[in-house]
Image (cartoon, rainbow, N blue to C red; front, side):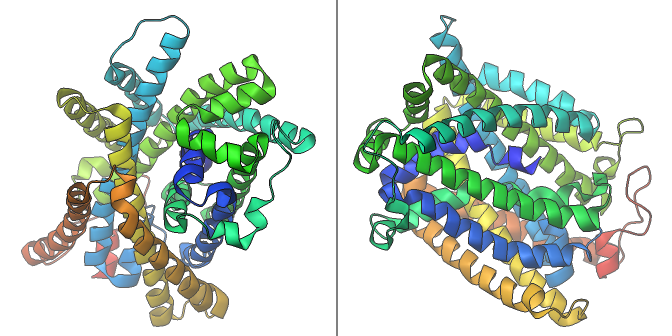
Length: 466
């Protein structure tokens, strides 16, 4: 689920050319290694604390247990906005990509939002049913998209590609530090969005105390290695200078052109089709993540209680899934009515919002890990509870600073728009904190546990905290 959310082929097709063109050039592949290292440091504390957080609220639950109910609910509201934004970005990109594919094979030109609405319907049906069905669909799509890229990587590694030979730029410090390293890090860190969602699915895991940490580490290592290898193969296929030039002139079709040149027309056609399935896999994964956030909030009494109920047959958060589908449909309607471009506006603006939001959430979670273990002494391992979280927090703050500094570039160069988007994220966090205070003042006690859910009675997070 989380590897599918990272959309491996979409990153290779969309992010890698942008990183080559606007980041640190041919050395961009090494940026994935740097970002993976920072996120692995974050994951050490995240996984150590996972055995002490029985709720399936991910960032919300971690921040609440470490920093308190108000920051926790603020993080929940921030996460809802963040993941809604990334899902909206995928809808825009998916709609435009399907339209281009249909026209490529001689079909009619239709508005992007019709394809997006069709994808929403399919994702909604799968999200309503048991998680295993979504898992099977995502597994099949994931294997297909990863396979085509790995075949391409292998051919380039063996033959040396079409250019002067295999690239070594990623191992040269001067090249890694050249160009705009800040923008390179910003694009690379955005490519990992979704790995942290392992904790969201702990209710449906057979043995969450073991499998959540294992899945988190494995997802990070696999995603990081795949991105690094594939980005290196793209550079090596053309040669350092030519790869950067091609990425600068035509980033949108660079990967399809490259795969076609290396694997032939059949490989290029498969890449185009699998890019669509990659986007849908990411869409379905984020749909499930958002549904489980709403489920956790409904279960804790901070959202309508109906959202915290699970389906009697499918054991899925069906009400939360339906609510999430309605929210996504409303956004698609707004984008369509306002005439926003699906790529340069919907995708760029929403992806930028998600990048900033996820970095802020991870930094808050890192701080919560440090405070939680300092206060409870539930785990006394220095590396897991102090050293790695401190290093991870420092790395995340650095990445967050670089993202804020380069944020206008990520969303098209508008400082005013960057300020508005940043303001929305801040307002979401503050609104969650205020909601907690107002709810506590009016009720004095937490709501009773919601019945008819997959959660056992007595696990209301706010009640535990109070």
